[in-house]
Length: 202
Ligand SMILES: C[S@@+](CC[C@H](N)C(=O)[O-])C[C@H]1O[C@@H](n2cnc3c(N)ncnc32)[C@H](O)[C@@H]1O
Image (cartoon, rainbow, N blue to C red; front, side, top):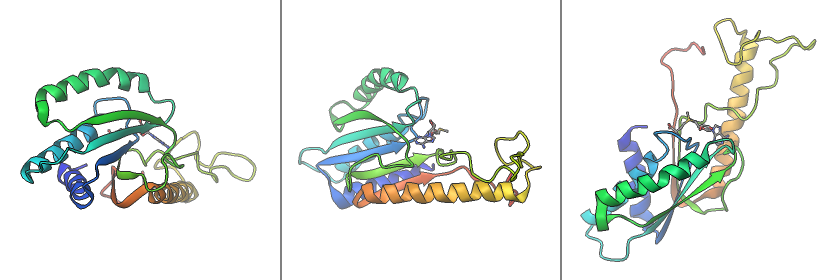
């Protein structure tokens, strides 16, 4: 995700809504070096905007929801939070916007939050994970069309490519349907995907 796109979206939400409580959800947060990147970005952008707009009223309180599948190592995420908090407190001192963090285990291919409750969604590098193995990868007799492969390869026949495409379209539609219900008015959703430059699906 390019930083300018992310910053523009976060700033846009803050400037148009000025929420007293801003709700941010990172979908597919993982448990590694990128897990807190969106939190840092939101804290930076909102803090900088408040300074440049010379806002004197109470700062907003930010609620971060970190979502991933239940098998994600949330224990590791929560254990790293203390150190993260100390680091941002040192960096920002009393300019730090107050924030709270909670984990949300569950699939983003279903509803995760109440209706119209989230101001900003972020989802990066995660929607290439399908919700299930596509249907249609076997012949009527039960033989595998894709040999032993678990993804599209150069030897995959067109039916296999189509099956993956159909599953992706179904999943992405469901993802968007859920986020549409959960996003607050004038909220924003930023999605980033890895992509390829050629037409070859492998
Ligand atoms: C490659 S990591 C991306 C991590 C991070 N967002 C980043 O940009 O580096 C993909 C993450 O998506 C999560 N994921 C995959 N399918 C998911 C689903 N249906 N619901 C929630 N998280 C999912 C995986 O568990 C994994 O942690």
